[in-house]
Length: 318
Image 1 (cartoon, rainbow, N blue to C red):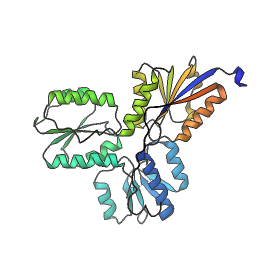
Image 2: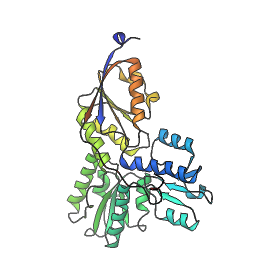
Image 3: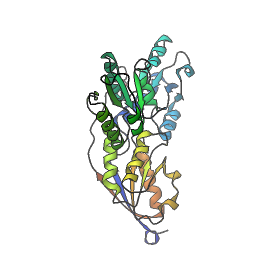
Image 4: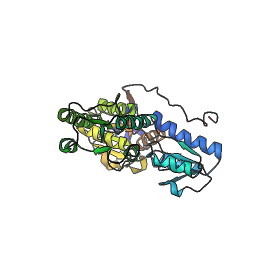
């Protein structure tokens, strides 16, 4: 089909999008570990929530497991970007395993804050999603009972503390900025003395990607978000677009797109979650170009320059 017979489609691509510094670092750690130790290198939990990334690393020699007990003796293991409970590195040391911690430094910052707050006697209200690896890892930094999970505004309004004067709150790094602001406002209204985190816990990449979606969503007839179905930050991007009144759909990659969804769409917004590589964005654009006469423009709301250091021991390999 020639361009003259294809329907027109204007693509508006959000920036920033895709990989953040924490994800880039975590993937690099696995690649360097394979280079240093040779395959196989075991990884506890998906290094990041993206099947394409996981499959690519698996092809290079990574073996993904859910628990440390699945890791054989004598092989290296990497902990995922989401962070792990304190008990995991302790178990690894007890078994004599070489391990590398790929926890995002911004998640590690939340872990340190949790420890400090418990040390000064504060009960922590942790705003996040039950069962998410980051939440499990953060709860695993403090004694049982020292932290309560707050998932919704209703949870914030219903929570009854034993000591209202000794509370603090922290948040998962990949939440909806707007939803979290509502929950925090409710907690502060109920408990004026609640201690806030040092700086914003929601990471810069999550905030930036949500702001970029807000900047383009209203000018689009629909939006596509490239990301895994278990990726918290990607799911939040869908919600952000829909709150702007724009229909949005999460797709893991181009092959998952039902083109029937684009019927009547003249302007299509595209973004990608923080664990989705740029390759998947270009793959989607390529697929759309097969069926539409596309024009493409990028709308950049901020430029990201953050980079994180590698763990000691891998810097020489890099």
